[in-house]
Length: 99
Image (tube, rainbow, N blue to C red; front, side):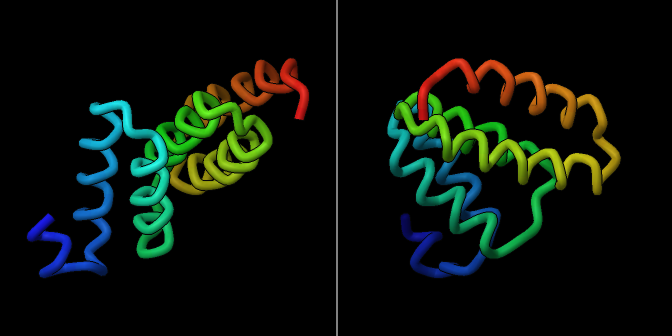
């Protein structure tokens, strides 16, 4: 947390904190730091995977779909077609839940 105080606008600090919170099962804190990370930098897709997983686990399926749709755009922009396809399939799975 000291690093966060020293560098509150460093995207990698937020990403690292998000991953630590994710490992601990603290989904809301993970979401907070991933959203901050994404507001500070453009991700190639991996952060969207974790963010969507958090929303899915919290039962926020519509938000998960929105995140995955954004992740598809980023994955394609950075030439990660297999990630984009993974996200498309995941969206189809999520459509089975009522929003």
